[in-house]
Amino acid sequence: MTSNCLVLILFLSHINSTYENELFRRFNEKDITKVQEQYSRYPYPFVDPKLEKTKKSIPINDGPFMLEINHFLYNGNGDLGRNKIFRILIAGGGTGYSLLHYAYVFTAYKTEIVYLDFSKKSLEIARERAKNFGYQNILFYHDSIYNIPNLKLGLFDFIDCYGVLHHLAEPDEGLRILKNSLAPDGGIFLMLYAYYGRQGLYLMQELLKILNENRNLSYHEEVQRSRLCYNNHLENSWIHMQGIFKEAESDVGFYDMYLHKQDLPFTLSELYEYIEQSEKNELKVVDFYYPVQRNWMNQRPAYLNKLSKRKLQIVNEIIYGYENKHIFFVSKKNDSVASLNNMDNIPIFQVEKISPIISVLTSHENINKLHIRITKHNQMKDVFSLPVSKYTYLFFKLLSQRKFTIQEIIEDTVKLYQKKGKDAMKLQTKIFNDFKKTLKVLILNGLILLRHKHYSNSEFV
Image 1 (cartoon, rainbow, N blue to C red):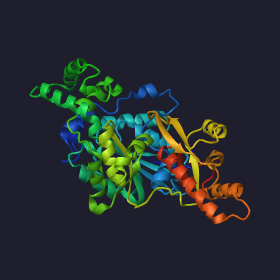
Image 2: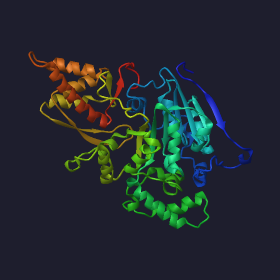
Image 3: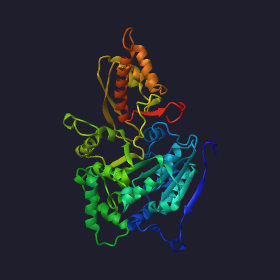
Image 4: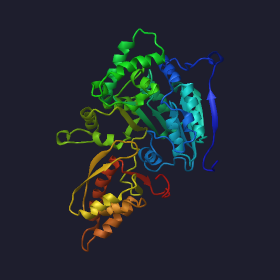
């Protein structure tokens, strides 16, 4: 046990003897019985913890790392367990992918992780997986999101609620409970289903409802009967407009995608209204997690030039139409993102190999635009354009060292280009504006995030 890590082990399960021999217990009258029964019989996502006992690396998961949490939710200047306990709630933790992710990310920091799920089987799998990887700073609660106010858990600095709220009978109530559980300067990481990108999937759901209605089928029978229909559709049919999902290979994944009994998708317009218009506008959508999504959402051709940023994103979602998940950050603060105007922030590259970019800038002196292709984490490849000026090469040389503040980068660039008798302040303003133009593109596309200079060079990288 390291001295840095607060270790707390507690398993709280509210079990009434009446329910001891039942597969699941309905914790709250707002819980949808069929949904809770589904996750009790088919813990999701599918995983066999016994196969992980010999693994050393954590499975890939859609979850932010510390630098991302710090950049988007803490203005690049959060404590995040460095000096005081950082409290994390995983609301609807399923079989533990998010749990393992945050336990891994915050291993060396003072954290308290609270896992909650109404599926006992899911919880047992998550607990076994945490044990397999040696994580112990976790409190497990077998209960409903609706019951969080009764559990007296206190406030959390960070809440992960991935793919849960759209399965609730009362998603507004679920969001309100999360909001009331969030510390004033904390943030939430959410995933909600996206409407347009799931249309083929919903056609399949509707078809299977018709074929299976008024039949008293077991879960296994329902899956087997539905697969006969699913397997007889050509790959290019409208039902497969988003492709053939690998997730549907398991019965657990197939049921969750095509036979779920509560599935509420959101357009971007509905998402913004859901998050920001509830509870007197106390929550704000900060930004979307994946750079690919941020990129296409902010494409601005000339005919859309007069639209506000939000209207532009709503229009672009309809134009592109393929996003099936909205994954994003939420905060109570009006502005929680690290700013390029804070001269004490250090830009940190999120990719190791920057040398190819520097090489191109060195060998092509007269280019004014650079096309960059990048694949980050488990995201699809993306191509974007970077504006190039005579200062860009030096920017990249300094940025590649991941240790200079914005102030230092601007000052070093001014020193190199300052000529006798010329206005230094005018040059500094020009270089700073050029720097911000470059960095905004790099941040938008996930290549750079900001953190304050008071962290050591080894932290949050």
